[in-house]
Amino acid sequence: MEILTAIIQLLGGLAMFLYGIELMGDGLKNSSGAALKRVLEKVTGNVLMGVITGALVTAVIQSSTATIVLTVALIGAGVLNLKQAVSIVMGANIGTTVTAQIIRLGSIESDGSWLLWLFDTDTLAPIALIIGIVLLMFIKKKTAKPIGDICIGFGVLFVGLSLMTDGVKPLIGTDAFTSFVGFLGNPWFGIAFGLILTVIVQSSSATVGMLQTVASVPGSGITFAMAYPVIMGINLGTCVTTAMVCSIGSSKDAKRTGVVHIAFNTIGTVLFLAVMSVMQKVQMFGAEFWTATVDSGGIANFQTVFNLLTAIVLIPFAGWLVKLSMVVVKDDKPAEARHPELHTLDEKLYISPAVAVMEATKAIGAMGVVAQTNMNKAIGQLQIYDPSQFADIDADELELDQFADSVDHFLIGLSKNVETAEDDKQLDLLLQAVPSFERIGDYATNLIELAEKLHADEAEFSDSAKQELMLIGQAVREVMDITVQALNSNDNELAKTIEPLEETIDDMVLLLKDRHTKRLKNGSCSINSGLVFMEALTHLERASDHCSSIAVMMLARTDETIMLNHHDYLQEVHMGNDKDYRSERNRRREQYLKPLKDIQ
Image (tube, rainbow, N blue to C red):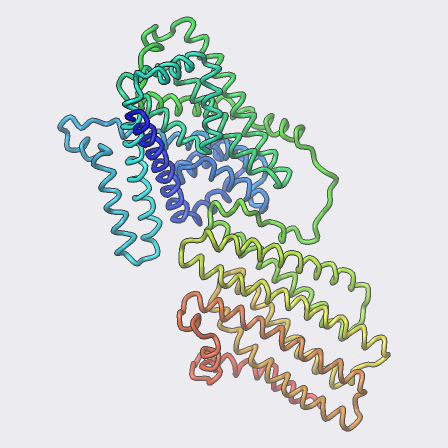
């Protein structure tokens, strides 16, 4: 019964430990997601700088897996190239050792020192939990939650370690434990054990923490000669669980990054194992060094030295590792996408929601540019018919539709991961922008169809209609241009200028429909061209309406009243009570409506 209780306590402690690592990592990622992206984007072709960046990022977010998955996703987004990614991955192995150094805090004994007492995890863990729960329950600022998660994760991690330690103690001296220790006497078995356990647990930090926990219990019998092969196996295991998994279904360079990670860790393990075997055989540092039991700090130190020296030795050969990956993962025949900027989103970005939101914003901004370009071409077709452009317009429209389907799926998945209010509001904006840009693309296609109909019927617009169409087309082009600019630059002030122009376009459409109806009645315009003109006005008006919707959602991110009722907000601004709005509307009417009225 005692053994069963110990096993349950050990597994419960492991569960808390894993949850603590995940919670702390999530808090760190959410509090520094934007900064991480900026840091990773500034990595140059200098391998050493890439290694340092990878180490620092991993040290901050406490997960080499997160760093590598994020790196692979940024390759797909075109932010990083293969050489930069390889150097970051090499650095990630160094950064992950920080977790083990944190875990060794659990072995600190205060010995009456006030400072050491404070850093003793029996003191530090409860303090972290108290701070974390205060931040989560009583502090309403959006920055408090990630910090609270970090604190609670830290506290839970060490409570889990304590439970694991208590669970291991009754197992010491049992036949099963003695056999386990004997099993680790063979370095190849140690490597295999570390590898398999890491693949099962899916966390190198957790596996090292478990080894540190067992080694820290008096009488464990874990010697340095037994521990170092396990650590090497753990490093091999983490490259299987991250690089291979995250490269499935990704770009060629992403897969090559996975190959480099495997090659890097495998070569490092083989070289280090050979050196350590020779050192052990000649009894370097003395026989007692190899046979003495190792503690938590010794394991943490060896993991740090192992990863640091492996990186130092292999940094000069980074170029060779890249070449090896290109031999293993060969290029397909080039097939260029019409708009590669629409093919950058990868669900692996979910691992850092802040980065995912920023990349989604960038991609949807690119979608807006494509929709805007198609609309500009379509308006031009009503003025000068040129069927040679139709194939390009149709191809872009198909790509817009395909992107809309894929990005909707991406955003819905992302919505389950975002945790900050700011990212959540940005996500609301993006979910509104995607169908709006898609519909604008559809209206461009509708205008092309109208141009084809006009040409097939051998009809044409009157001179007045041509002038009118040119003027309203110019206004729609401008409102789309402002919308795309505002979204891409995250400029709310620019977004405020959209509605006055959109209202002016509505006024222009009303005037033009009334004027064109009179032309139809007096026979100065044919039935066929008249119907095309009226339909064209409807599509242009609806395109500008979608620009207005995007602008309203942009402003709603910082104004809760707009978010609660868009209709009331638009009614209010249309009343002209806002001085700036009234001034901008008058300027737009002077720019577009007045010249329209002067057309005879």
